[in-house]
Image (cartoon, rainbow, N blue to C red; front, side, top):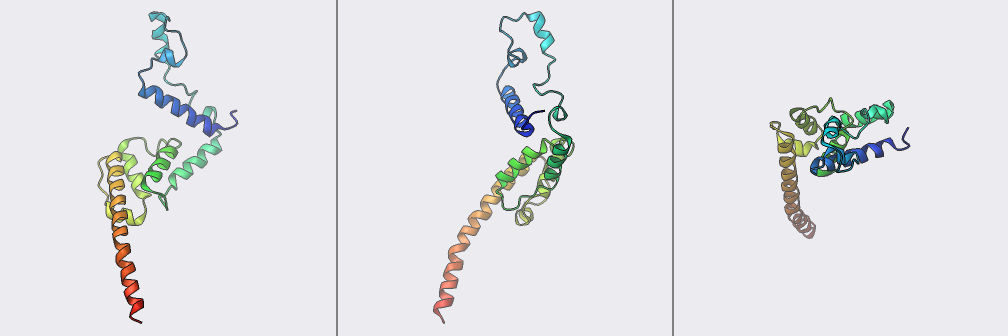
Length: 164
């Protein structure tokens, strides 16, 4: 058993994503020499992943259940949209059935947004990416509007106190 299974899992996912981004052949992932014969290459093409038998191989069931609970209870709270989305993506790996495809991800993400942002966002989104993009834009607009209101509020409170 790995002493830090979640750290190991994150590391494996990071490495896998790097291999996905780079045009790396499976035999290179496995450390096989370039001179490996073409006949033998066909055998390693069927190696789907560096990860051994999924999470269950090295992450305790109770830890997986805890992470699934964290995902299902995840709310934006006082985080920025980007911080919330990053937490959502990170925790969603432990609950793949809840977000099996793009159409199921958007409503789940939307349900955890802050109520002020949620009021401005509405409910119709074709994709997860569209929702994230709109939420980031709306968060920025709300922040700018808030900053514009601060001087007006300060001027109002200053004039109100000078009249006394």
